[in-house]
Image 1: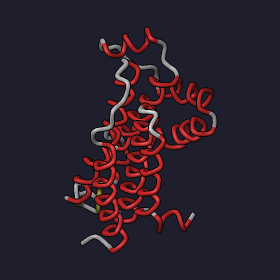
Image 2: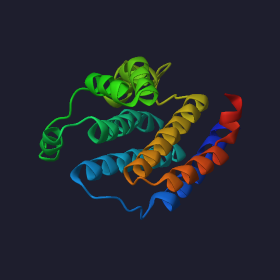
Image 3: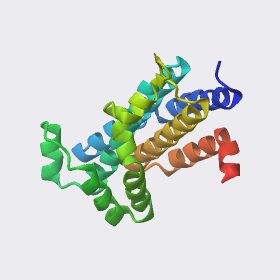
Image 4: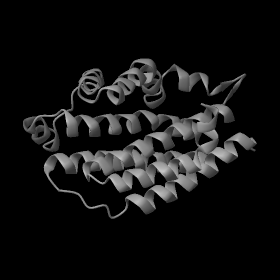
Length: 206
């Protein structure tokens, strides 16, 4: 059975998912190609949190960890295609072209967004290798499944609590990204107030 900390993390994750959907669903924005790409990627970021929540709630922990990298990628790409990409790069992407490497996206965003971009770049520098290992079946996934002479997942409740909280934060940032594209300051304020309310216990510790 999960410990109380994980139970609480899953409960607030569910509360946030419902609140986020209620606030974001039906948002209207100027449907340029740039806006559509950004909103679609932010929406994917939000959906990855929902999928991670379902996996954690069903004790499928390794696969939940594997979703954190694509969630982070969706968020970073959403910002880059909205704030940094040229029209030609947007066209190439929707035609199936590969985006720039994460290192280049993060560096561009640091220059374009200031402090928010610096935070993206810092997270990428500090956590990208671990994200890749979780997603692509690296050593971290192997070690988490070798318990004496058994093969079974052994991710701790504490680590899973941190994961689902982190995914919810990325979901919140993705929702704020949609509000930015929609130029809807009231939506951004409502998202902030609701997220702060649900995650007050975490913010109070910082």
